[in-house]
Image (cartoon, rainbow, N blue to C red; front, side):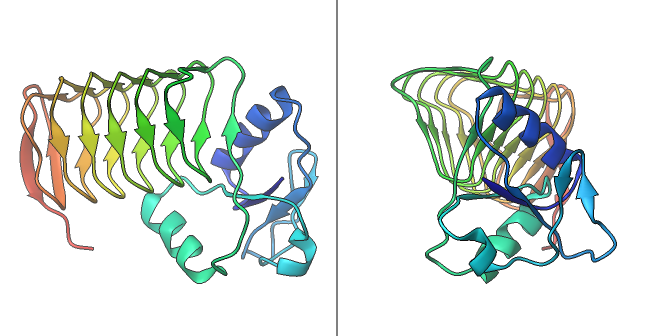
Length: 202
């Protein structure tokens, strides 16, 4: 497995891969000053030839940057997953390519996690939740049953979303928020109870 992005987020992904018995071949990063991360070589900008038959994970925490990287890479790139063995994932759940599931996360039955998502440390995704591509569920956030999260949205640490709520695309839900109503696309929302503060310009 190669990683694209030599960041703190990459360090946690490396831990997950190693704990799962998977080999980390190295990293790519567009910053020429970064030569190593932990014990691994950073080879510079992405190189399809070096990737060879290995899989790739975009190891960048920011959802919009992760999408930009995926959009600029060839369509036939083989993306992998990193799932820490301490995570609990129902056999009836679906986890898309490029997605990472960190230590202690829980994904329940019939949850659908799409591509290039982050289910971070101790996050809980209950039954029948659905999240689109490039979503980030931060540490210890809780999604109750039947929650829907649109593309690129970020649910910050410790947020709670009650059953059946729909979060639009490219939203940010603030840390510790309690979300009881639907949130429209491109919204920054926070609080207990959670309210839309402003629209987000992308």
